Image 1 (cartoon, rainbow, N blue to C red):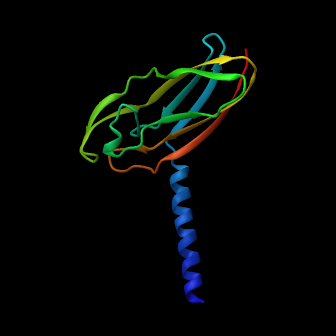
Image 2: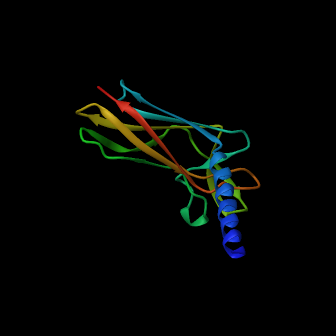
Image 3: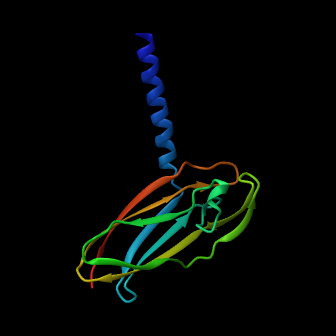
Length: 149
């Protein structure tokens, strides 16, 4: 009986620990449809002292770079690749043992689409945030936006 109680407490302790990291997102996201450029505009506001990693960062170093995946929707077709409007800053990171590329304060991303039919577009942002002393495990942030001509 004692073993069952111990395992249950351990499970809920881990779950609470994981949930506390999930709550520490450190980035506020906003996504919208720009009808003029026919692009999805994604803006992230990053908490002070925290940063995100750019896809320019060597994946072999360890940090998880920001990625965006779009769910396929009939009548809505992605054109080209993501355009990162905010230039990442090169940063020698001794914790990861090399040069990383980060965004601080804000990041803005555009993705062009060809629209044949209006609909809801689902996207998922995957990334990890770090400050100078710790990193939060990678998280997925799902966002849904309405696309129309």
